[in-house]
Amino acid sequence: MEAYKVIEIKESVFADNDREADRIRAGLKGEKTFLLNLMSSPGAGKTTTLLRTIEALRDDLRIGVMEADIDSDVDAAAIAKAGVRSIQLHTGGMCHLDAGMTEQGLRELGTSDLDLVVLENVGNLVCPAEFDTGAVKNAMILSVPEGHDKPLKYPLIFTVCDVLLINKTDVLPYFDFDLEKVREYAHMRNPRLQIFPISAKTGEGVSAWTDWLRTQVREWTK
Amino acid sequence: MHELGIVFHVIDMVEKAAAENNAEAVASVTLELGEVSGVIPHELTGCWNWAVKKTERMREAALVIETIPAVTFCEGCGQTYPTVPQGKICPHCGSEHTWLRQGNEIQVKEIAIKEGPYGSV
Image 1 (cartoon, chains in turn brown, purple):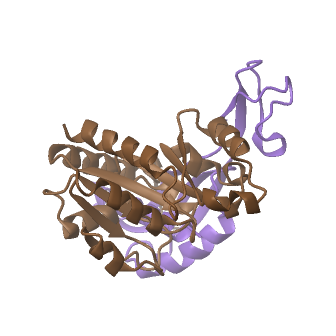
Image 2 (cartoon, one colour):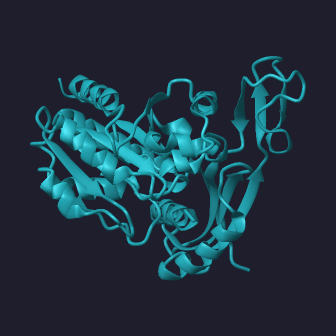
Image 3 (spheres, each protein chain N blue to C red):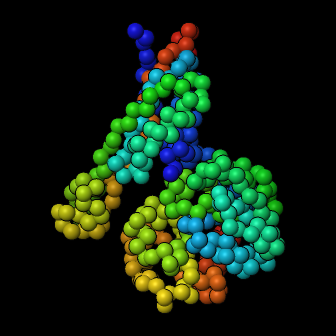
């Protein structure tokens, strides 16, 4: 009979990833670059929100974008036309980005001359929430048609995010979406969560969000 | 859906530990999985069986899953209760101020290795 030796490991599967993410954050702090991890389901309006955000901030901040959708509906040219540097990340069919993939992307993008890098994560409310990407802040978009019960169904992502953007408020009259319920459910999961209702289409509410983001970037890069 | 990504992370960790311990092969990997970790054991095993075949040392490694029950602590009355049947609301006092004490772990507990010809270093 062959003898086996048992080695105790007792370490979280995410431990390596978390260490790598901390290293990325420290590196970004050193070169005064802010990384925002933007998450949502497919179709919540990440790209439109991103374009609005770029429009509001591009005079004040040097911005770069990393696109990570597996099957992107993003018009990469539109992002480029908005006057920011962007790259497409290759997740190899994976449903999320981890710290290692993010670091590769940051290197490819080149970040030393940027103030703000936005990582557009894969459209998905489950997997991206589990992997720390090394971002300074995590934001998610929930759109009105998705329903106000999402904080109950996908609790983890609401727990790890710093900001919740409630998008497509322009269609609120047509849906049974209760803004107050969303606040209640989301704050139950995460009392520190900042919530901004916006319409990326009409621009309503967007400035409150972009003002918040500008302040965060300035704090980080000063 | 994220099970494959998790499997890759586990394989990386185990490969590293196996190399450090001069293992010729890994016979088994014991994973502690919280009841509400969001990982589906059946899916995880499926991904595992596919992914280990692509490795050198872990080709024959069996995946052993130990479930950690989910337990919630209530700040209202200081008691604990099983999370899965009860959810967020404390069954003892009805409070909503509760948090998960254990049950979301995804952790490599131990590995069994076959040592190389020179023993462990």
